[in-house]
Image (cartoon, rainbow, N blue to C red; front, side, top):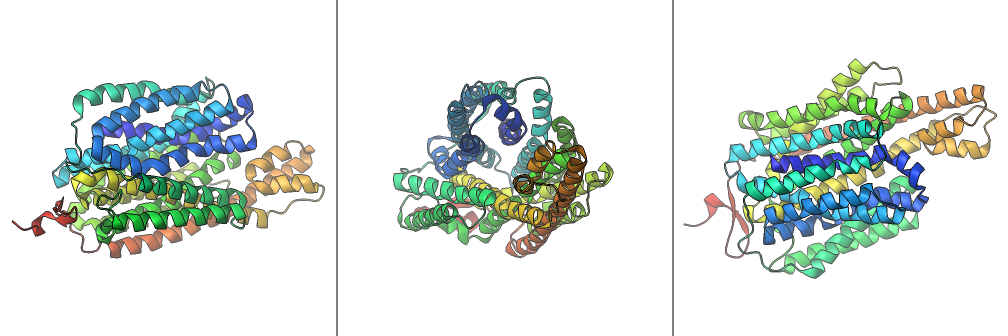
Length: 507
């Protein structure tokens, strides 16, 4: 319950900034560069430190790290809410990311060590996945309610009492667990992993914003790739690596990690696309948009709850593939939507896609945990979550580029629009609506209609691209997890630190 509450808090926090951003920009007046750092620094700090924090939890104790991180998360949330300057806000958001990096791997690794029975663990992971997905739906709803009555910082203050509750309850309820043979943490590996992950995600985010041809994109990408290659090579030579790269030889582990990464690739980009569709095409308020999105979180929660029972009936590979196929089918339904589509159709598509997502992610997350020894649960959880962060950034870069490219290429504006206005209108739908408001009424109406119609066309092609990727992923997961048993044998460490099935160990 405490692990679920912690991941719910993180999921909500990942979504509320998007709602608060317009009012934040109006009140604080950050520069364009400052605003980008306000939006991105949390993700950079989080992704860059996940692997390190997962290993620290394995060494000092996952309960200790979770409670420390949650206390820091509550304090950083208060600093964020009352930030007086953009620089203060950037620093506070960075602290939030550091604290979040301690929490995410701790929650899953605690579940791995508390629930030793296979079926109980699968059920617990399903509940964890369900609550995580629900948080992405609850975040916009809670943020919309608060922003209707309070200032932008109120969306971060909701973290403070919840964090305090988790710290107090966790101190009494959660058992401690750690690796009994932890070894030391290699500082060079820490630096290489953080630098590599942050540089790659920075390159992906920059590509999504500025295109893939810039020297900054290629420079950051090359630096990040080189750092990660050096990191992997170093892990193969260390007696006590941050990541045991031999884990990737286990088909169940590598298949589940890949499924999580590419699944998030498609779904996060589509989620951001629909945030624009609801508010800029349909004209719904943030609160109404949050209410409209809520059934998606409920569908994902339902899928996660059903996953454990289905695995015991038809097997891991089939359930994971079924979930991804359902998500692809939901995306195909999304591809038929336009500006006048009724909510009933949208609801049906949302429930199909989100239920499939809940099924797939519950199975893949449980497979990751079951494929590693309990002593390395924190490091394994961090690998899975780092892959998801990279998949999300890659999805925004690739599918976001598809959306923007189709929008720019197919937008046809009437005569009478100046070149400068046309440039702003072609940047994004939000820019088009803002620019159109300053035009003469008749021209403004024509521009607004053209921009919305073109955006819907771009959205359709984007989600259809996502559907194709998810369908291919469903087939790949079916093959990758084929033969992986419904109940994965207990994995233990040998005297040299290698991972083996318990049944295969001598004696």
